[in-house]
Length: 557
Image 1 (spheres, one colour):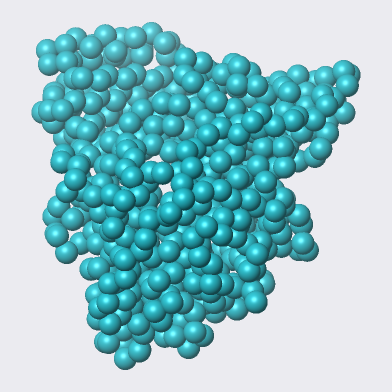
Image 2 (spheres, rainbow, N blue to C red):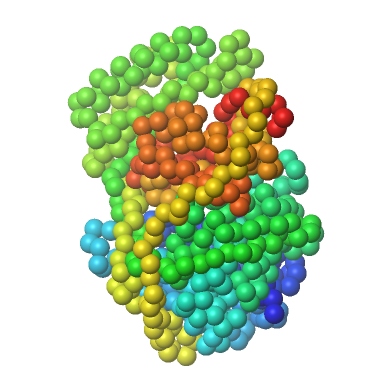
């Protein structure tokens, strides 16, 4: 029997009408919504400081007000992590909404992830739970299941375990569902959104994805008929590589072996995933800690026309003199040469000089920076102006991972009648180890080459995990893979992306996917909320890599 699980949200702020589209566009058994990310947990933590009853994604409630009747009529279960820091509060709000609308639904929630009390000084500390709490809720008859911090894939593994009767230890089946969940979790990224080869289909409004899961853990990734975007081996490969690292993809219930995944095109907008192997989960659970790191401010100076470098040097000297009176902990300058000579618009004749400062004291980065910048308005380089007046300094967050034994977390499924079902920790665990180095294909024979962008023959997708970034690169043909596997080493990666030259770069080959996954350690500093670099989530790091030129065999071009 096939279980059809769809997704209607990849982040807090995703397309509002996706829930209705997914409920009305075709057959579904379960509809999931992923609202949480590292930055979201910080945002919800700050909400909870202002109002202890807050801490969940309010957008979900507004979507549900429009769609609860549709879900009830179509017997579609809804599973979401929109509970954030307060899953019990959201579950109560859903019950009140259902009573007001006169729709009889049973609402359950999962709790136990909140470890904030055990980590003094953190704004929010939450363990990443697995799917068996969700499964217990569904087995108890829940129509809607609300969770806090679970792994993104748990929104799929939980319903699959409940539907097929899977138990802990059925690792291959669970791993297949983890892979399906990872493909679905970011919504339209599986259907052509943010895709390297976006010009190959109409991606103006991609439809949201769904997985047809089978009892053995295999699945087909597809979308509702007539919706935008497209699903092919490339779009699924891109999402499989997103925010992952090595061949072992660890979770609370199972470690999925990404090097075992086999993808085949199963018809238009259908990709079959099979062969996924699973292993015992690691002995610890990941806990995401969010805390306030201090205060941040920035000012962007506009430099127009001639003498860009000299203008930048002048304003830097003037600002350095002013900031020396009360030096911030961290001062960063970046000159972005967006200008070009003999430009026919003022904007294209201008470069941007960006100054970012951080400090524990808001006064140091607030009034001190703002006053120093504003005072230069009539006393600096010709054409002086800024993109926007600097502010008073805003707080920024810091994210870090810690790990606790499974037994340190009491995962509980709280069902509609108030019963509390405790979810046992896994009986078997295994330390996470690197896999043996896989065999690579024979290199391409020598032949003529041409200097060209890597992106002509390879796709890429990148993202963040705390302070690290990953860049997944895949070849589109066997011949291109023969070249890529030997050419794009960790050292070559560092040469192509100079920001990574002083950092640790680890390369993970995944031959089944014709892919290489690179992890760049520390490039994002203290995580997305700290805004360490101008692309704080490394979303475009892969596209930068694709734009770099190499000597590529002409046979591939």
